[in-house]
Image (cartoon, rainbow over all chains, first blue to last red; front, top):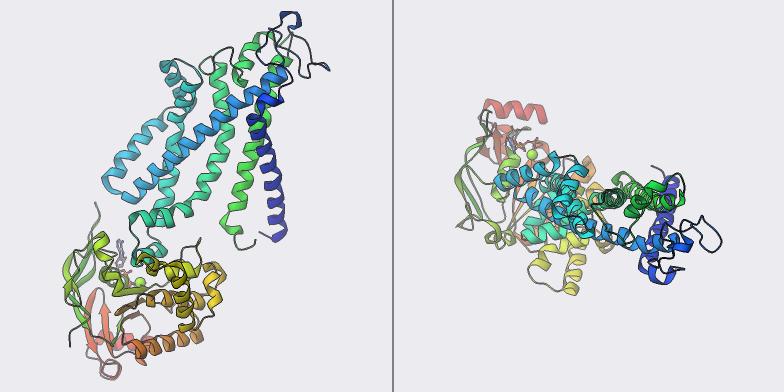
Length: 277
Length: 252
Ligand SMILES: Nc1ncnc2c1ncn2[C@@H]1O[C@H](COP(=O)(O)OP(=O)(O)OP(=O)(O)O)[C@@H](O)[C@H]1O
Ligand SMILES: [Mg+2]
């Protein structure tokens, strides 16, 4: 790859990072950004189409949709970030241990993760969320259950690839113990792909969390969450489409931003481009 | 004089389920004395790297024993080996590949020093001193492996091996990735280091021409067996084995 391409990637990454950061800021400062109280009902104002006073209209209980979408970014984005954070750290540690340890521990652990991967993801998550009884927390737990094996497999494969490289033998000869080998050498060398996967996963998980909420297995009313907002509006798609289009658009935009960020990050970290910074 | 390294009846058999066993190294014994340069030569697949890995305990032997300064290290594990690695170091075949791609050369050279408790400032000074000793500018400490040439990386790898002043240096085909002029420079460097430090070398190569000038003794390996041993003159001018003759004709 040439330098021009690399500069282009760099610029794209910069813009996407700003956009993603913007989403985060909205979620953090949601309380101050809402033009109206997102939970205040006013049946006189029910199902108002977008107007100057209610930019995205109101829902069937007369709540301002823009405010609900802004406050909903908090439950949606924060839960997903928390979810990805826990799952990627746990899965990666688990995978590194398997790859490093090898032998029987590795075989057993990998069969367990196969077990989780054997079910179609969202169906399994629905089953788990169903058993746990809905609610945002349980939806997050359900999604965590289906998503950790991906990180474990990735980290294990990467660790196996690194384990027998000469630089690790050299580090052993320099007197490093197992933890030093893992944390000083293996982890930094496999973090790139894990990071890319995690970023791409933000988009996927945003959708799956919204999906669970849409199916009433996630956030409970009256909590503002994009998926459940869409679910509540689904009967009014003909008469008041803005109720479903608003949160739908919010999901779409966030998913696109995080997916593009993941793709660009992958291009940026591609080892074939290294040395041309 | 006591040998630095003594290897007795060393054997390595690789066995995998459902496959015939591979005897990579079979019943090998030899000694290396302080200040001695011993070359181990043999064609590709003859088991040279396997011997190096067993001696450095990166690989467990199937049979036999390894003594370093008279101490049996054959069954040592994990952190028991840390003091052993202060007496024995190795330089690898792949110049850049033996350094962590995400860390600088200086970081790699100083690693053994830091692991044995040296402070950061002293380590940094010592790294620069080592680089200079190996014919590199001190600024190479800040280079990443991919930013240095093969020859420069190999000099840095030698600097790393010298850092904790070992008594035995194992070199596994350290010049085979380098061009001929750089090969000669590296050999000269090793030669001058040996004169200064009296370090013993186990120098592995498939190139007889390369080792004849500097080595004191040559071991010839064929399919995992040690078939002949002697001074360079004995091996080259009066080889006893037919295989050795053949090998000499093909490489010289
Ligand atoms: N981990 C392993 N598993 C199975 N067989 C192995 C393994 N490592 C080495 N061997 C086999 O042992 C034999 C000796 O290999 P080794 O790498 O020691 O040869 P070498 O003399 O260093 O060759 P080269 O000059 O190509 O480096 C070869 O037949 C090889 O296929
Ligand atoms: Mg070899």
